Image 1 (cartoon, rainbow, N blue to C red):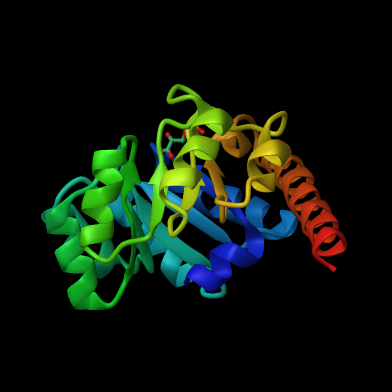
Image 2 (cartoon, rainbow, N blue to C red):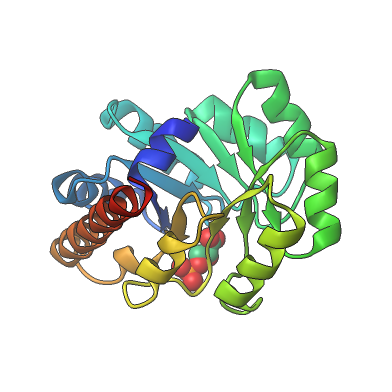
Length: 210
Ligand code: 3PG
């Protein structure tokens, strides 16, 4: 699961208010070259959307986002979610994921939360809300104190600042909802643009590390 996220380095965050939108928007992701999505538990149909996505898009890595308690986490796993993301750290969710052997990416905004996550054995953390928390400067500062942590920044990330975030050595992937603004065709184009940018960054990186 982590390998897959680290391969693509972009996590599209979907808020489906209507399950009719699952098929056209995930097809747009597929055409754009990004077979993964985090479907958030912010709407009543989240569970059904995850179910539909997992059944129809079998080659995708489908995760659940905004999972804030153990009950929601169990629902998400039953629906087929293969990874779980929270805006903050929930020990209850961490326990359910550990039991199921599923990747858990808890949100963290402060050093104390990062220390709590590390104490639970979690070292891949969502950094949320990234821009409001100080963005790149904060990630740089956190890297000094927590060299063992790799972050998934989300919140305020879009095509204009994606490259800078992907370039930070302690960022393993970036998340965001910007790709879902507009029609499925617009989504496809935004996804293609983001995927190309991530690939370009990968090339630059291997050139630097050679
Ligand atoms: C999330 O849950 O990761 C965020 O809502 C994504 O933030 P964005 O909507 O600013 O991209």
